[in-house]
Every structure is written in structure tokens, then in C-alpha cells.
Length: 364
Length: 235
Image (cartoon, rainbow over all chains, first blue to last red; front, top):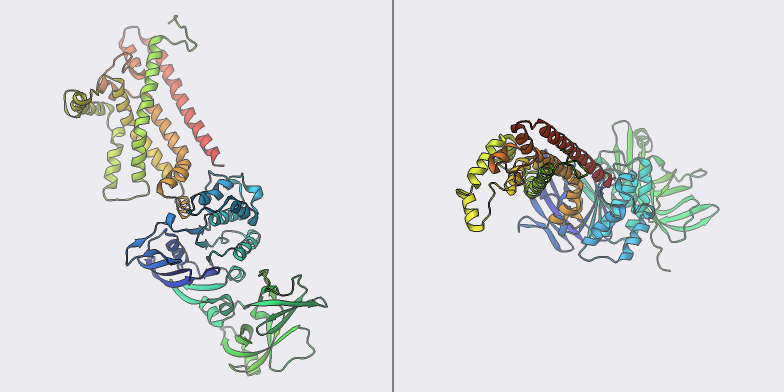
């Protein structure tokens, strides 16, 4: 485990009491509503807040141990932070901002690393500008580069997209994905958007009123009805990883634990691993295998739970060869088809959203 | 007055008073600046018991009548007593009847102006930037020099220039503490006073007054310019 922490801190109306770990080479999303204590966790990890009680260890090095009286100052922690409001130094050029943390790193990366990060984040044409002359998305990218170049052992991203409009988000997300795919630095990504979590994170920690309400992989949690209930939002849908098999007749076949999905032509090499999302609204259920049907994807599954909603809707949890699927249907349908836990069904999938994540192909 | 041999059309006595005023004020703000900076750092973003009292004490030199300040300095630093006597006997340092005494008095009286300007400027800097610098590996001094101070500079410079212009006009404390000695402690305001005390000196007083006005305007203009340049640095 790369980072492990246990914090207790009283603030405002409630107490933060959270313990979890952030594994190496992974993005862990800290997800939860405003006021759940996410920012307090970030501040405590960065050393900007001294919690009442607790300990933090980064790669075995204690950063905080209230019992032993240890509190490492933020400048000695090697914990990088990308703040929501970027916090670029307004009197310095973009280049000077980028070099600020790089110069001060105890183990300084070589100069080539700066050029590499500049290219990775597409900052070439911004270097001589002052932050006041940058757009919101550009500021975010510079802040990301600046934190990265300080060679942190842990990178905290505190809602880096929250202050941006949809277009700016779309502009910066691909850069975050590139960063995630090429760095081994563990990242804690704070967000209250499941779309961002789905695209970026490997693991999710749900923080609710200062407590860890759920914890697991993106695949296990997002398609889980208990998780949806804990977030208080409608089911987000299933997220799972697939491998590109082949493309024939303009259709691409994607293999996953529960079978094969067919989607429109994807210009991706065989063996490429992708992340797909299937929304609960896009799944229909049948007791018998449907024939002569327009949908391309019909999967055999077993019902593991049925949750009735307040407005006549029902969310059905499906086990599809180990992958979790969710179908949103009506309670009337549940009754008519006599759906209950343990009943085998066929899931008819109307649409699949393919995420752009590209993982290295396995060695052949 | 027809003996003007310099481009400024000033008499030697006028030039003497002008240069002395500039020298006294410059030394005054320079010695007071580090103290004002330290006091501002101690007070900005911080609260401790008795803070209001400390703040009040530090404002005192500005709100007390200058003559009272001058008298206090005279009692404390006069060569015959207390601190002043000890300084004189041990090190030969003497403030009374010396231009250094004038600089000491002017610096003390304008100290609250500098303190206030620096403190406001420091408090106006986004604390989040200091935090960001810390997470990037910058220690307290590093953060202060490279992030906080550059961003506070416009306010700091404007405060120093205001204090400089104000100390050019200091009269009461100087005349009480170090007297009115031509070439040593007779700054512009004291020269104007002396001219008015001299029968037929009204014209001389008027010339010196115009000089003082020009100087004050230049100071205000300079402060504005410095602030603009510093702001331009940020954009």
C-alpha cells in the first residue's frame, strides 16, 4: 500500500472519521456530496490542516502521527496538490510556475522531464504567458503540470474540473487520462461527478458525512445498487472493462467476463482494453431468450437483487458472469415477469458507451 | 534671489533645506521599513491576546501630537539622561541637534503608515498561494520572498512613498527634539517657519512653500507610478 491514513477531525457540525488507503499506480476517487469532508481529507494529506487525531503514512514514511507527536510540514511531504482554483502564481510566467516545484524537489527530475510534461499537457504555446492571460482550462493544465514536476509521491486532485464549464472539462479530461495512463504516482481524485470518476478512477471511496460509506473498484461499485442507494442518486449503471476482439461487417466485438458485446465499428487494435458503461435505462429484461430482435446485445444473467423505487420504478441488479449490470424497469414489469433474486433472465442492451481509456495491449 | 546659478533657480540655502529634507526622509523610511515589515508579519493573519492593545501602541506615534513625540525623544535620548546619555558616553552616538535625530523622529512618526500599508498588502495576498507554494516544497522564508512579498509589493511601495512624503512635512517632533539648525536639522518645513519668523521673509516662505507643494505632488505621482508598474508586473 502506498498511502494509508486514518483521520479523526471535528469541524463544523460533524466529525470526519475516515480510514483508507491509496494504492500505487492507481487513481482512487474520493467521491461524495459537498460538505462530506473531502476537502478536509485533502488538506490533512497535504499538511495544510492538522487533524485532531490520526496518522498518515506515505510509502512507509510517517507524515502524521498525533499519538507520537509527528507532523511533517507541507513543504517536506512530497504531496502534490492540484487545487480547484489552480492557485497559479500570478506574478510568474507559466514556465516559472512549472519550474517552481521542479526546482525545489529533493530529487530533481532532469530538464527533459519539463519538456515531456509540457508536451503531455499541451502547454508549448503558453509558456511565456502570465496566469492572468490563461483560460480556465489552461490554468488547470498548468496547475497539473506544476504539481507533477515537483515529483510528488502522492498527487491530490481536489475537484480540478468543478469550476469549469462542460466544454473546458471536455478539453482537460483527455490530459488527465494521459497523465493517469503514464504515471505511476498514486493519485487521489476528489470529485462529486460520477462521470469523471468513471473515466479516471480505478477505485472509489464514497465519503458521506465524514464517514467512509463504501469502498471498492469502479467496476464493483458503480454498478452496485447498494452504492447507488448510498449516494442517494439513481443507479449510475454498470462500468466494466472489455477487450477488443475483432471488427467485422462494420461491428466491433468486445469480450468481457459475462460474454461478448457488439458495438459500432471502433478503430482500435485487437487486444485493446477499454472501459464501457451501460446505463440502467438502456437494459431491458426478458424471461426467455428473445429471437428476431433489433438489439445486438443479449446477455444471459441472473438476478441478484430487486430494489423498488418510490415512483413505481424498480432497479434490478444482475450478475452477468461476475460483471454487475443494472436494469431500470417498472415495478409492474417485475410483478408480471415474477422477477426476484436468483431468477435467470436475458438482459437486452440497447446502447453501450465506450470510454476512451486505452490500456497497453497484452504482450503477444 | 537673483543669484540663481542653477537650473532649478534655487538659492544655496533652499537647496540645502531641500537636500536635507530628502536625506532625512529617505533615512527615516529606510530605518523604519524593516521594523514595519516585521511588525506587519507579526500582526497579519494572526490573533493573540492583547493584539488590539499592541496595534494601538504601534499607531501611537502617528496619533500623538508630534511635539509630544519630540519631547519624549528628547527626554529619552538627550545626552544628559537615560538611553541617550549611555549611547553618547559608550559609543559617542548623539541624536539631539543632529540630522540623524530628525530622521529618527520622522521615521518613528511615519512608522504606523508603513506598518498599515504593508499589513494591508500582506493580508490582501491570497493565502491559498502560500499553501500552494508549500505543497510545491517551499519553506516559510522561500514562500515569503518568492510569492508573498512580490505580490504585496505594490502596497508596500505605495506605503513607503506615502511615509516618505509625510516625513518630508514633519515639523513638531523635529524642532522639539533636534532644534532648528541650518544645514543640520533645518528641513523644508522648518525653513518655512524660520522665513516667516524673519521680518520681510514672506517671499522666501512662499518660494519654499511652492517647493514643498511640488515635492508632495512628485511623491504622490511616484507612488501612483510605482503601484501601476508593480500591477503591470502581475498581468
